[in-house]
Length: 78
Image (cartoon, rainbow, N blue to C red; front, side, top):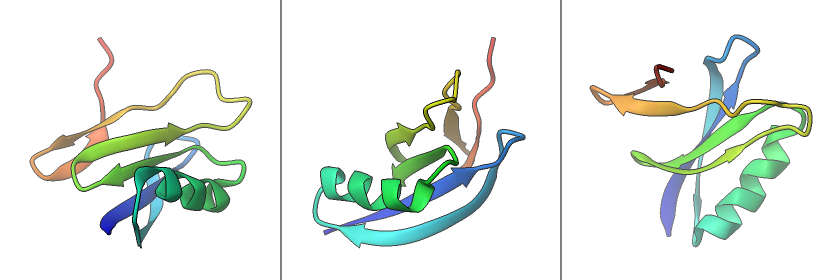
């Protein structure tokens, strides 16, 4: 069993809430997180590992985050 956290992403591109849970595989965690997401983009993480970005059908650009000093922050686009 592994620990996961699904982060919902607000319209400003920042994490607005999250939910922690435990699943036996990444695939099961993705299914669980998709049920939580609905029409809001999200990212599924297991510790510092990004498992998958969960985007909405109308989302044009994936939002990417990275771990910086132990915190998840939006990745700088250059």
